[in-house]
Length: 192
Ligand code: SAH
Image (cartoon, rainbow, N blue to C red; front, side, top):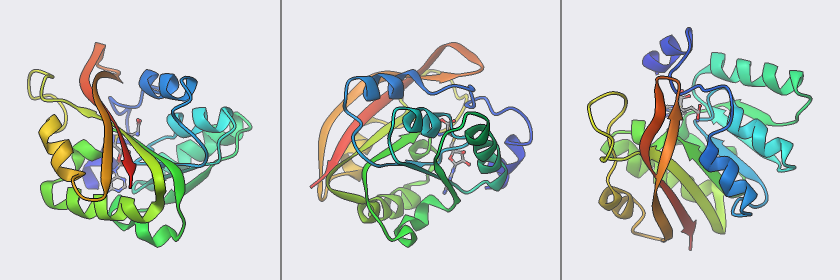
């Protein structure tokens, strides 16, 4: 958390000032339905894009200053969204479910133990049949820049029980320091 707080004092490399292309395409293809929770929403670009498309959207993050920027952008753009300071390992405290959960760059920052706890928490906030979309660094991204790489096998292992994996596709994460983008996996995983 200290790491993220200090990075948000400057310009985080992941904070591109616009929604991620993969999420725009998912929405345009009609894969994103109903109410949405964005886990680790940062300064809210993906949340605000979804709000502009008419979705009810909540965004959570554990860094208050990131959410403050998100609120300011929402006000400037006359968009309605709910932003809450919350640890993604405590999603169960939200006390409600969503049709869709989106994740752009959260899963790959979690440790092995945190992943288990996070997936248990996801189950509490997504309705049966609802879908979790996740965009994470893949092991195909060379070098050691950025967070840990995640393999398809690790994704499958994390979502073994009670989930159906619709697909795990090669994708691109946009970043401010990588003009060609970062090699990523885009996963679509539904709760049974
Ligand atoms: N989705 C945003 C931010 C990606 S970076 C975007 O696309 O720009 C990962 C984000 O997850 C950061 O904003 C960080 O503060 C947040 N984060 C990391 N661990 C978290 C946790 N345990 N609970 C809530 N937020 C977390």
